[in-house]
Image (tube, rainbow, N blue to C red; front, side, top):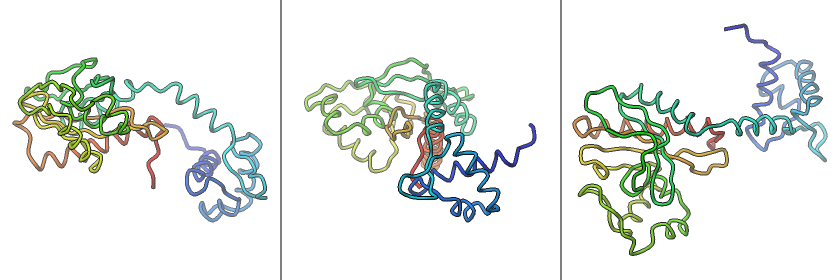
Length: 257
């Protein structure tokens, strides 16, 4: 790895300051927050403004906001994003940590489609594949995604009287019971499936958000019941939340401070 260039590092530090507060800064703000010499800050701010990375705030002399160049770079980055590819990388990292099967899935109608999967190395593991489709109400990823829908859209997809297929005796088949379960998921921010799609497997799932804050996918960890326990459950919930947050960050989401 090569040497870091101090001037470039400082310029990037200045740009990252705009992520906080109201999105505007003055040179004295930068001096105070980064503890840099005033002359250095003046030169860096002048350079960033000349390259349109920052622009003066109308009506507020001496204050700057982000310019068009960061937007253009961010837009190009967003164009190159591939949810499946990013999901596969994060799923691999999560699976290496817990050595259980990790999925990333999206919602299509009332089904989930698995777009990424990394297997456990254990001999006993969940049998599944990327591209597989399952009823959303029977899976932790599906319930997480259904819980993230606006109420009107959820009602349209799962109306009263809808026939919900059972994959196991534990599957939810009543729309009213499903809505009650989804309300709890919204409150907790995590979904749990206890042998609802496979009689020998339980799962936990957390939401994945894009740069707008919209839930676009869910990440789950699936565990055979022979390795399931309350302590493991709590540990995996935290890991699923962490993995989903990492994938969200890759998609441009920035959580509230």
